[in-house]
Image (cartoon, rainbow, N blue to C red; front, side, top):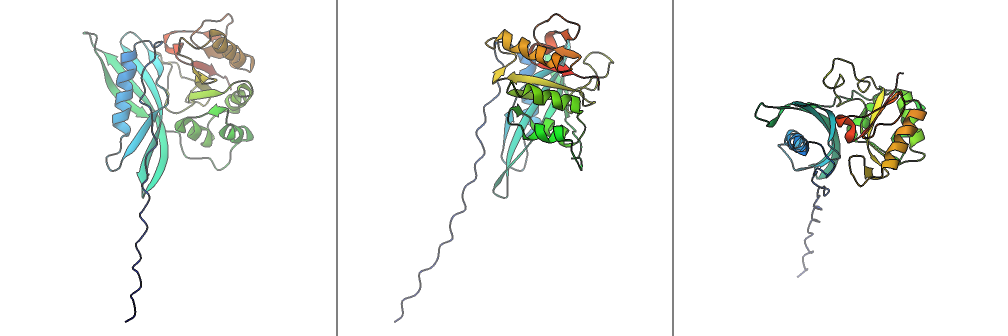
Amino acid sequence: MTPSAPSSTPAPTPTVTLPAVQAWVPGPGEIQPQVKRLAVAAVMKLLQPTDTRAAIDVIDAQYGGILSSSASVLVPCRVYSIRENRVISGGTTVDVRLSKSAQGTWRVTATHPAQPGAPAATLSAAARKVLANEQILLPPASAADIRSGQVHDSVLNTMLQLAESYRIGISVIRSGHPLDVFGTDRPSDHPRGRAFDTWQINGHAVVSPATSRSLITSYMRAAESLGSYNVGGPYQLSGAAFFSDQTHHDHVHAGFRN
């Protein structure tokens, strides 16, 4: 009797797991932290897929504007999901609008995900360099802004020069930002591809009280010296280009005329 050949057992399909992400929590330096908590919760609900598991990594929650009874919170995030047993990485920036009632309760009134546009057929040398620079940390929507070809080289070249001295965490460039300066009818430089916001410098959050004041102010002065006509941040510096307000306590804004 001839022994039968052993039956082959298919190798088990490896289990794909989502990356571990940390929940976003407001730090001690935040103004109106409950507003940001509400905004982040709204983004988590908005971006959670209904047909697959996902992990949402909130990179930052930054004010696009904060007034006495209205606010804009910009939430850049990465979204990891599983499709066909593979981890897919994506993400966006959401402009969350909130209002405060007469009783003092804040609520979310609208969410506006970024619309960076389709990738351009060709990119400038500066755009390619920024996308490849490991000293410049870009959230998905900001990287897509650059790939769309709609970010001016004045912005890109300044980022590259700053990256020679600093490791910079970008929060917003073009898409995902209010069209107008919040609370006004003045067009913002962001949607026109003429501004960028920095939420982190050398690994230190701008909003954190533990971050060196001199680190932030030297970065602000460097942005101005490289051509920014409008530099906002948590500290008021001398000079016509600089400004500070509650909106900019959590990031450094650098705007350009062309």
